[in-house]
Image (tube, rainbow, N blue to C red):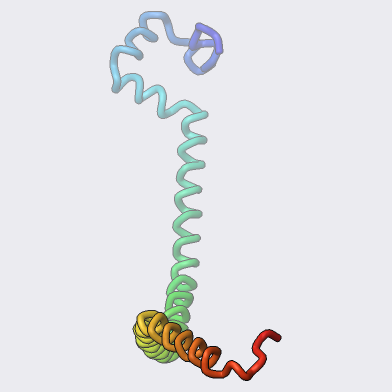
Length: 136
């Protein structure tokens, strides 16, 4: 890009230095020149075409979106009964797991007592049953 606006924007080449300074100082004058430059007109036309295309896409895709959301809602409703059944089964399994956990704690408390009694019986049997050969 060069220092001279006339080189970059040929449409300004016919303006004097004073006109260019006034163009920079006065926003209305700047807009009246800038927005009517051929490049700007092309950009505005392109922007308008993009807006129209975007609107067309929106209008075409909106019914598809509503169809998709309706079928999605139907799928959710169809799965709802199965989900409630699964939820109920999971609740039952959870309750059973809690009971089993409590039973496990009971068994852990009872284990030393049971083990002690077994050792006593085994010791009694070994002492009382001396005629048996337990060395094997």
